[in-house]
Length: 421
Ligand code: GLU
Image 1: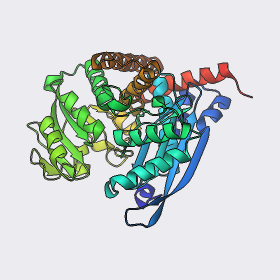
Image 2: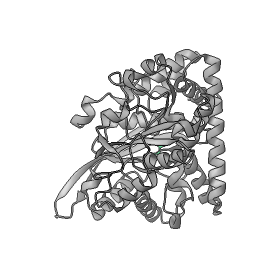
Image 3: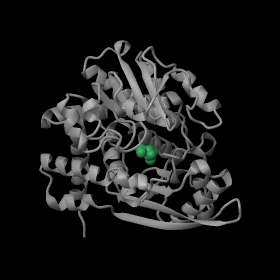
Image 4: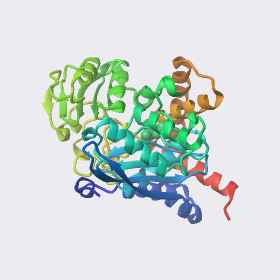
């Protein structure tokens, strides 16, 4: 575990606390709880990779399959120095709940490699990705466990995975991984899917809170795939984006940030960050979260909204683009303040939803238009939001616990009917 991960909360504890609370609220019996508390499979591999300078470096890799009760397990692969087994376990369980909340026929998994992709060459990343695929080739499969992009990975890594896996199995296996480039069986709309789902969630929540988008402001933390596209699509609703951030820090502009320009700036910056962006006054990442705004979209990483800063948050609506951005200790503080939180397992489920559509198209061998992908994904997200909202009213609880209740209910019912040994 890196020093950074150590001083942070353990995301597994955060996940378990919500799980326990939801299980208690819905009266889930202990037998089922004991099954769902632990991952079905957890693998750690050590991958010796030849670096460009000729040295050999050993990288730690993980794949955790939390559950396959609802279908093949699904979830991304993360490349980051903060990756550790407990984090991957929490992220894998979150995938189980996420797929159940949006009602797609998948279980949950997650993978990760402890590495710093920004400091590695393309060749080193390719060798690492292929070695990881080979090491996990008995776990991965279109009907067993299907990886996808996550933090630090994208279409290129998915292309290497599908290529390596297809070579190992001696057959083209498009469906083994999603988030692929279009020319390798990817789906239109997949790149934008998570941000689009965040926008649909924000729009649904604003309607419930009777917020007028054209009179609302929004701060987005994180400017990777999820953050930048969420910011762009939310601004297209008429919302003014007043703050954005990435590893280089935060940028605040009460008059509104031109998101398209910020995206172009990052694309043209050799560092691929917002460093040097002049469309807003520079603030720290900590200041960014407590800026005056109506909507806050944490789309960076885990454990950003904590017991330390939750009381200072000004937004009345939080839409979680990242996985686990709020610690369990922060939840009651936000609730006390009357802030509506659209939880990660609902708000960022647009990505895995379109991953599912990609896999369906791979199996059909027939590809949909972007319009069809978006229309169906929007419908899935809207229905999931309404279902979670109704459940929250029924149990008189938060959207987060309601989302867990929806998910646990479905997974537990499936366990009961499938039975065990
Ligand atoms: N990594 C994304 C997530 O956390 C997408 C997973 C997928 O598409 O399988 O939801």
